[in-house]
Length: 113
Length: 110
Image (cartoon, rainbow over all chains, first blue to last red; front, side, top):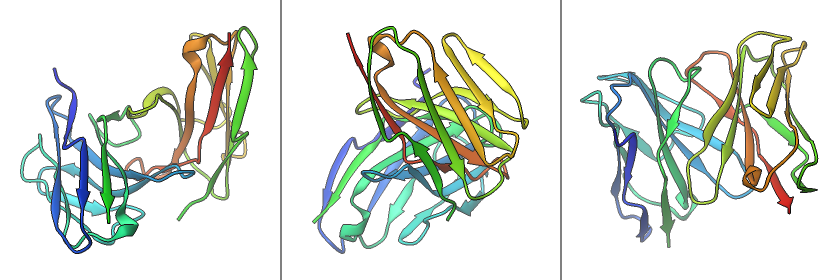
């Protein structure tokens, strides 16, 4: 099992560009989530999904879109990148709700100039 | 959003010493989790707590779910160099939305 994989590992964008951060898991987990981590702050939930076709907003959803067409994949889209979205992004998955053990990916470090 | 305060922000201890850290919230939670994050990696779950007053151990780690449901505590006994990292608490009421603390950075001096 690869666990939770994220691509790319590093990305630099210019303001206004769009991109998709990829996340995949091979553990057949129903719950998947995206967090951002900024210096001096804990992880903040952006969006989450409790199964294919079901997504919901977390604490900081503005500027991000998600969809969940399969159990395995949960991409995060930035439609028009802003410098405030410079952060490290983590994807996580869990067999049931997030109250159970969430397995985190290695993260994507995004810089928006 | 929810505010979880962790203290201390950082700790520098000698190998073999015990460590205590805590996390307080302005809101009540019904689940508390403790994670450890190594540099350049995602957090890894250490302990999960589901009931007020619960005390749970995982090797040298012990965590408690505070009676008020607004706080949680993590203790590490006999610290070793590989305990170095950032420790995060996280709380939830729904099981789907978790709020993370700001982290406690632990340095162990051999």
